[in-house]
Amino acid sequence: MNGIPKLIAMTGASGFIGKALSDTFKEHGWRTIGLDRKDFSAGAPALAAKMQGSDVVVNLAGTPVLNRWTEEYKRLMRESRVTLTARLIEALNLMSPRPALLISTSAIGYYAAGGPHDEDKHKKADDFLGQLASDWEREALRAEDLGLRVVVFRFGIVIGRGGGALDRMLGPFRLGLGGTIGDGSQPFSWIHIDDLKSAYLAAIHNGYSGIYNLTAPNPTTNAGLTSALSHALGKPAPFRVPSFAIKLRYGEGAGVLTSGQAVIPKRLIEKGFKFIYETIEQAVRDSV
Image (cartoon, rainbow, N blue to C red; front, side, top):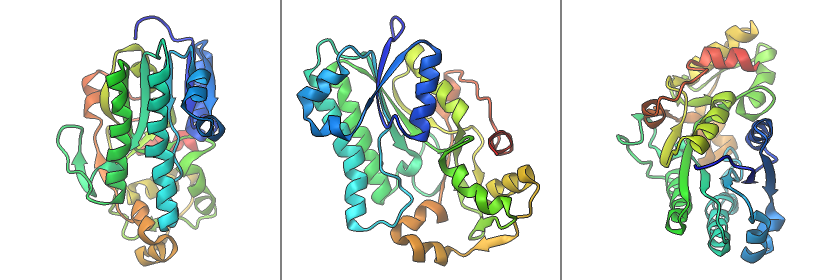
């Protein structure tokens, strides 16, 4: 974008990723304003007024995917992503002047299980998550019609100290009770929080637009993640959680753990983006 942003409006600012990005933006002298449920409930004119003066909008909101997917929970997942983004676009339409850039979130659940997938060569998932991600992205890209530059980051699993998915895994592993889910062969695509922050800065400064996979260049497997955690903590990880046990707990939502996608960040690599953490072993050692 031209010039240096001074104000960034952000949904999901109170989460693990939102807090990390807010701290990074503050280090660059930028101010962040959080947009919460009350702001969206107040209607498009009020939301537009709160965002007025912002140079960049970062859209991170979304109910956690790992849960039991009742029909009600599916509705919440969709509302917190697709409906919220649609309301954001409605508010942006009312603004004058408008922000220059929208960076919106999607997920590698867009892709079918297996892979490898990149932004150009891939198979789209024919399931709830695939449709959710597709609809989410479609709403965000509507901002291009309003004259905004739009970047959509398809997140892998975000790894970092003090939060996120890894933080929830560490308890059993520290006790020597860790292990694989099923046979551990399911792909696991991930990104270290520091590389995620750098990608957002690159998107702001370097004119990125369109869809980008926000994953490290070397996806691993669930077994690879288990081995990295075991070695980093100096603890055995002898156990295996049967896939059927995960399905009993999470129902349809179990697929988040029992399957996975190998995803390559082709467009970031083509842009010359430099990853600090290219392997799961590096990322886990820094994060435990």
